[in-house]
Every structure is written in structure tokens, then in C-alpha cells.
Length: 162
Image (cartoon, rainbow, N blue to C red; front, side, top):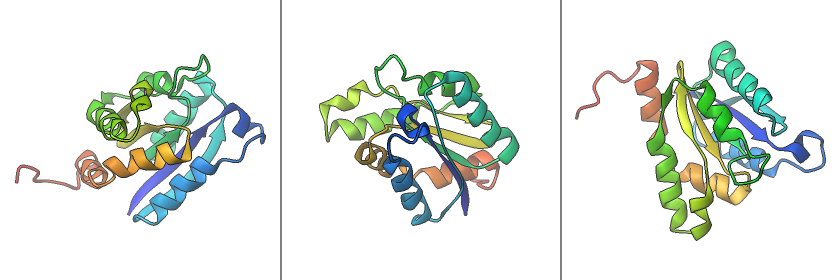
């Protein structure tokens, strides 16, 4: 089973002014797909706080996967990709490209996503949109490849060239 965290980035959500439907939908999707959601938190759109949480989940909790949601757009407060890119050791640009490619089939606004994905230690971090529909659609579009990627990352997959 893959250990996972859902990190919602939302000023209003962190203040209790908005229900976190996106985070709940992602948790439900993960749990119904053989993932163990071991950490869930809502934090504001503050770059240093996002970085601290990502580092904590990767370095201390050592979970396999972090799905962030929110903070990937053009708003002045949207800093999730910048926080992610500042803590990762390897970029996983193909994941973000695949999500945008598949989203463009649904809406031309998908090109406005600045979502990033990358690796820190043995953890894969993926930024998702803040909308419930967008977050779930984006993750579903890459979901089948993620377990193999994590197996490679954690050393469980030994032979990939078949």
C-alpha cells in the first residue's frame, strides 16, 4: 500500500471560512484506490509554511506521495509550485505535462495551470488544482502510472526495461 498525504493550500480553508471539499474528495479517491492517507492538513497560501509542511512530510513522516491542492493558478497568493520547486531534488515534469495535456481535452483553461511535480528523497510531490473537479480529473489522468513510479523511487521495482 502506498502511503500518502493530502495538503490543501487555501487561505479561506485554513481559517475555516470554506469547507475543504477538494481535500476530502482526494482522500476518498486515494483510499478507494489502495493508498493509505496518513496525513491531511489545510494551510494558508504562505510559501514558507508550504515548504515546511512538504519537508516535514518527506523528511520526517517519510510518506510515498504528497498531493497538494490549491495555489497553482495566476493569483498573487498562488505560490504552491514555487514552494514545491524549492524543496524538490528532482523535477518530474512529465507528470505536470500529462495532467495539463489531459485537462486541455476538457477545458482550454487548463493551460493556465502552473502545477509542478517532483521528488524529494523517497517522496513524490504532485500539485493539483484547488477545484474538486479539476483536482480529481488531474489525478485520475496520471493515477495508473504513479504506483510504478513510486516503486522505482523506493527501490521496489528492479527491472523496468520490459
